[in-house]
Length: 236
Image 1: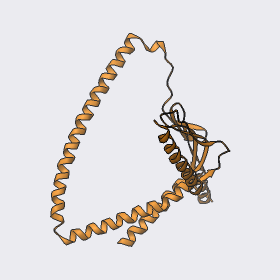
Image 2 (image 1 turned 180 degrees about the horizontal axis):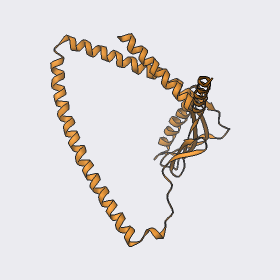
Image 3 (image 1 turned 180 degrees about the vertical axis):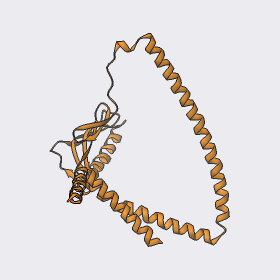
Image 4 (image 1 turned 30 degrees about the vertical axis):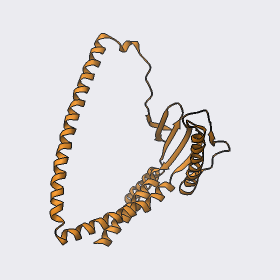
């Protein structure tokens, strides 16, 4: 009886975990904004909200602390640059040594055969990942609240060319979303591509929504992993 309760608890936990919705809201307005979270909760936002200015933060003591923090950050940044340059130099040296070793390995037939087997295994893994990607895309629920594109150009001919390219690209995008995702058809007038011969640059405004459940991600990941394991076993 206890084992049955534990088993039911594990099953219930897995069901609840798989049902958690992960949501992303992308807005292209005056600034590019990304809101991501679980359900109605927003876990992170890009860019972060600007804090209101508080005059109490501008005291002499706090200003000295800020200066010390900035100086420490500059020293840390400088040290990171020195470390990265040292790593680059080390990589160059290792690359040179590796190229010399590769020239020696090319002389033997055995090494060539091993490389061919490794390449075949890598290609099989890549094909398994590519085969599993449609399942992952198929789990996304996609909604376009607004997508307004205004084509422009330095000259009227450039604006007309940009308008033609953007119109065709928009058609391809909507077709891809409709075929590969759980796409909610937008309302009439929500998606529009226009041309403005007086505008020098193309302007885009949009509000996009994406949602996928944890269970759908895990199912796609496990499917890809199972396919990769099968490919590796088949090669060996």
